[in-house]
Length: 557
Image 1 (cartoon, rainbow, N blue to C red):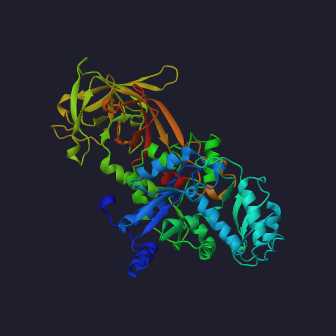
Image 2 (image 1 turned 45 degrees about the horizontal axis):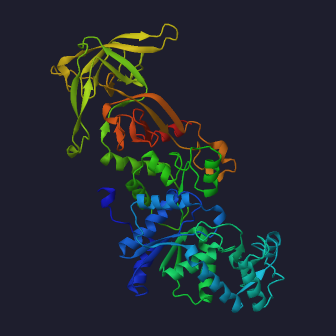
């Protein structure tokens, strides 16, 4: 069964939704994906996207895209556009349900005033340092702010003046009045608003007080009629605050917050802060570097959206935190590309072969299927002439036992072509490096079969020298050399120095000159054209190898 045909697996959230619908709690399911536009989305966000949009789709509901744009100092239009592009690329559409937290700034402010009038919020003038000191610890209760007893009128006056821009950043905050002795630190009079004199990408300079996430998020959910507010486990302790805020306000509904485990992937980092550090520190080449777990990086690397959706489905939705082995994502990628990617011949480290008994100037065009199991994809014509390129690793002067490729006096098959035999080896007189092979071919073996029934153990890929396209090929590997770099303070020292190899003089079959779709380079892996490609100068990225070779390397290490 193809991944696209696999039914969604059951999970505890899906069961909750089914029970709520059966009990008549909701007429329809309404979910939301609420990214903060302060960076690019990564594979962890893909799990949330697939979950929120997938649930809405499967239960005949809708999913909103809502930008949590409550921190203007870190938000950029570039990130908004990248987020929209990534969600669409994954195969989901929010239709006309694109919202921003800033859409509700006036309502959020009015609700904050309601909390003040009802004695549930107050303006606090403690410094940030004193606020932390008053908060207490996990084992000691907090202390009431000396400003906690301000009257409603005093608080409304100060909050109005905060909005008018009378005070500097940090001079005051608006806090909920809950319980400074609560065992849940999130209920110890959390900050609801802070002063921030910074222009907003949408509202400009209209505001200089901005709501905190915990306040803006739950109220936005309620205003939009969200039925199930799905978030990752780090927000579990915030659920009490989510419910408390909505219980104090005359909102149209009270959504249910449900937490699930986030997606952690081995050999990479998922923290936005660390991804920012990698990008701004130029440890990678931008947010779409194919070594990053960002969706734009995975797309540039050539990972199909279907592979990511399949990966998220296989990982599942649980409440147990764990780290998913990168091998699982690579497996989903291979399976998706195995079905969709046409085949091609490419030589990454070329070694010239001259077929001495092949007529000079003659060119044959050999028919090669584009996919061995999908005849509907058709075939292509491969040129074959006197001079060819083979992979340098496919020849050895003194091969060990078990080496079934080309060597002096040995015969091999060229894919779709002929048997050839190595007759002579040309080496550099100074370095001793092999520079050229002189071979002979058997014209009776066209198509790769010998009429006399003789067998050869090796089949090599090749490219005709006269028609070959010279290209740059980038070989990507794991960004970090250890499985859990996220758990290390010195994570930058764990970067894999071999995470990118750039090969400048690769030779490709003519069909690869114009880029196009992802291909399987036979015997080498799956590759995709890079946006850096130019007319006459193609660039291809390796998406994934044909099999997991890293596990063997790790075992040897």
